[in-house]
Length: 214
Image 1 (tube, rainbow, N blue to C red):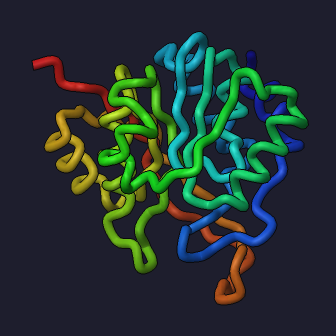
Image 2 (tube, helix red, strand yellow; image 1 turned 30 degrees about the horizontal axis):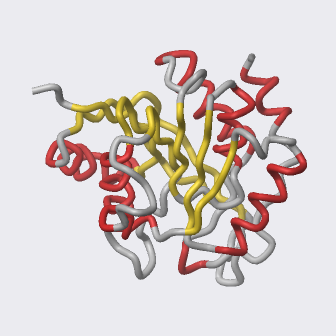
Image 3 (cartoon, rainbow, N blue to C red; image 1 turned 180 degrees about the vertical axis):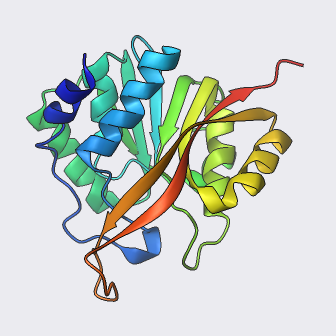
C-alpha cells in the first residue's frame, strides 16, 4: 500500500473527545501515523505479517493503521478506559475486530504484570509515548523499557530530539541499539485551555530500536 493510500484510509478515525493533560493525550494525525507505519514497513519490513503492539494506543490509529497495512495481529495498550472505548468503536467502524484488540493496563507497570502480556510476545512495538513534559518526568523511558520487554525484533518510537543523547544511552542500558531514521517536526494543535498558540512544532526523532545479539 502506498503512503498516500494509507493516510486516506486513516482519515475517518475518531479521536479524543476529552483529552487528558496529565496523560499528555495529543492526537496522532493520519499523516503522521501513515508516515511512521509506512517507513517501518517499506524500509525494514516490520509491519506486514507481524504481530504488533501499540503502547499508549489512545484511540487506536497506529493499531488500526498497522492492520490496514497488513499486520497479522495488533494489540493496543492504554490506561484510559475512555480512549479505549473510542478505540473499540473505531475497530468496529473499520471492521477489524478479528485482527485488532486492546487491553486496559498501565504501560509503566507492564513489566510486573506477567498475567497481562508475556515477554517477547510481539515482533514489533510501535508507539508515540508521552514525552514526560508535565508531572510525569521519565515516563518516556518507562514506555521504552516496557517495549524492550515485549518486542522480539524492533521498537519504533518518537522522542524529543533534545533528549536524543539520553534516549540512546538508556536504550543501550536496556540492551538495545538506537537508530534515528528520521528527524521530524511534530505539529501539536492547541488541545487544552492553557495553550496560547493554535499550534506548536516540536522537533522529534523517529527511532528504530533493535536488540544487541551479544
